[in-house]
Every structure is written in C-alpha cells, then in structure tokens.
Image 1 (tube, helix red, strand yellow):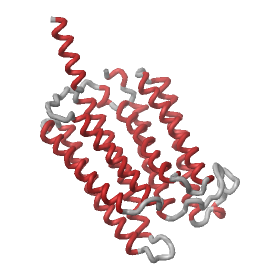
Image 2 (image 1 turned 120 degrees about the vertical axis):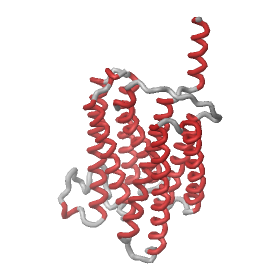
Image 3 (image 1 turned 135 degrees about the vertical axis):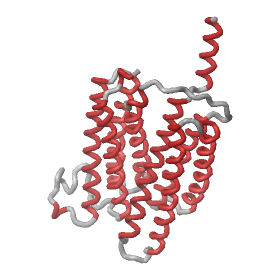
Image 4 (image 1 turned 180 degrees about the vertical axis):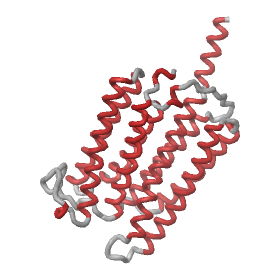
Amino acid sequence: MTQTYNPGINRFSVFIVFWTVFLFVAGALVTSNNAALSVPDWPKSFGRWFPPMRMLSGGAFFEHSHREIAGILAIFVLALAVLLWMREPRTWVRWLGGLAVAAVLAQAVLGGEVVRQLLQYWLPVLHAVFAQVIFAAVLSIAVFTSRWWVADQPQLRDAGSPSIHFVVVLNAVFLYVQALLGAGFRHNEIPIWPHLAGSLVTFGIVIWTAIVLRKRFGQSSELSLARILLHAIFGMQFLLGLGAYWSRMSTSAAPQPMSVMVTFTVIHTVFGAILLAFSVVLALMCYRLIPRRGEVAAAASRQVTTG
C-alpha cells in the first residue's frame, strides 16, 4: 500500500489543516469583538475586493480579514483537489477532495447569506458549525494521505460490546452537538444552560470512550497515545470554557468586549474545533486499526469455504 503515499500532497494537506485553524481564530475574533455586519456588503467589502486600511477601522478589520483568510482557504482546497485528482490513485480520496471544494463553496454562500439576512434565521450558527464539517474533511484528507494510513498496520481485535467503532463515532457526534450548542450561545440564539448541560454529558462520553480504549486496546501504542491526548485536550477545553464564562460574566457591564473575554472566548472556540477534529482522527484510527465485526465474519467465512 505504500505506493500510494505522496509526501507533497500530504504536507500540503497538513498545511491546509493549520490554515483552517487560523481561519477559526479569525472567525472567533469576529464574533468575540461583535464585529459581525461591520462590513455591510458581500462578497466585496465596501464595494471593493481589497479596500484600503483607512476603510477597515474597528470591527471591519476583523470581518474583512476573516473573508480574506477564508478566500485563501478556498484556493488552497481547490488546489488540493486538483492535485488529488491528478496524483491520487484512490478514487474515493479524489472524490473526498471534490466534496471538500463543494463544502467550502457552500460555506462561502452561507457566509454571504449571514450578511444579507442580517444574522437572522440561525444562519450564523449554521455557518459556524458547517465550518467544523470542512475542518473534518480537510483533516481526513491529511490522515488518508499520510504514510501511517497507507502503510500496512497490525490489526487489532475488538471483543467488547458495543463495538469501538460505535463508541468513537458516538463520541464525535456528541462533541459536534456540543459545538452546535456553543455556537448557539455565542450567537445569542440560546441561553447558556444547554451548553453547560451538554458539557457535562460530553464529559461523560469522553471518559467512557477513554475507558473503553484503555480496557480493550491498552497494548496499542497508537490508541494509548490517542486516549491520553483526548483526555488532555478535553480537560484543557473544559477549563477554557470555565474561563470564558467567567470572563463574560465579569465584564458583562463593559460598554465593549474586553480583551480578557475576547482572549478566553477565542481560545475556547478554537480548542473546541481542535477537540472535535481530534475525535474524528480517533474514529479514523479505530477504523484503520480495528476491522469491523462484519468484515471479520466475512473473512472467516471465506476461509472456511476455501478450506
């Protein structure tokens, strides 16, 4: 399988992953600084593609910067899709690159509707959580094109119930729902309590996932490291959430967003995206290292038939 490894494509896809994190920072700065709609038109800014700095005072700078970084991401993802189509032998990976391009274009249209509809109809929340889908797509491409994925890996046996594939997918789903609740609160669509309750439920799911990984696959160095990282990232995210809530409450009387609140909120938002992304990586690792039970049964049946 190693003949499918292309280091150039993999490094470029990893670079796009980091650029997407940069875009999350830019988007969080728009929300945290109440800079949404600081630029009244779309796709141009004040009627120009590249307005001078004198027109980008206050929140307009954050809003326009977010658009520019997103536009560059679209170019990067398109270039990656072209490279995959030219050099990648696996058809399903090529199609994943095409889907990533379509998702970026859909996200751009959704961002435009946020401006046109003046932040109505839950559009800012949908825009925020759909960004997580794009992040998962580009991150998956980085995993699928890595040397680790295409190399032969020893296969592990899952004897527990429910299957580890169900557990890690459920973990990712709950983290996605938690991201949705967080976006709903940040954009003033829902109160804080659903997000707080969701954090406790998600805490339980993450702990359960880690326990299952330790009990069933403690001998696997890859999954052991993944389990430790899952705990560490979630723990940091939980503490950042407490800090973000404290900073928001302690500065609620301020006439404008204070730097302490902006800092905590931006870092909390970005870490949430990283946590969700890592849950996707964990799920991909499990599907790569642990055959599904139907596949194991089919393989055993073929062996019996052949014998």
